[in-house]
Length: 219
Image (cartoon, rainbow, N blue to C red):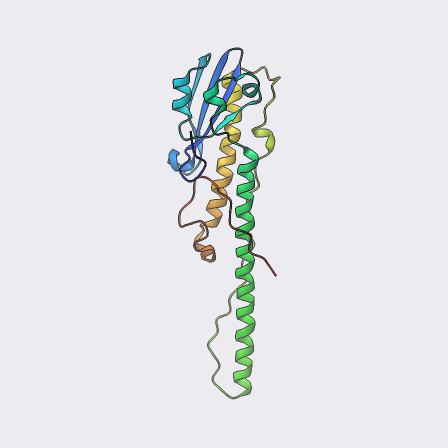
């Protein structure tokens, strides 16, 4: 059973329609080698093939389309770790909130430093003492965090009549957008100009979000 976390390989999308099963494998950016998540394999079978299912879903949570939820009765599928887009997005949002708090804390620190140094120079000048050296710290430029993909890109309907390969691919592309949304957040976090994020999240891009620490309060 795959584990949600740093070692997860991606997402596996399952669709079932008219006795045909499609498993579409989506891999994280760390596995594709391209810096972006992408589709890495897909198999369509007549009926359920457990060997194919286990192979394509290794270390990946499973996202069942509405049709798969309606028709699938296979225990190995129903007991697999499920991919929940809402939880994935909530973890992404927890990181943008946390990092935004660090951003404001750094801005506050810069403003306080500038004010303290200006006051110290003013006091030194009034006392006829050498002025302390002072290099003003500029305020930070606002971060334009990426927007999450629309829910419609991964939603599905049990009334859909498209072939399984078409519907599974469509939903898989939505999952790719979700994974790349997280990669965009990571890219923003790791920009060299944002050294104030320091050890928040580690020195390299993470393939999968976890719940962030409690947000830093901005006064």
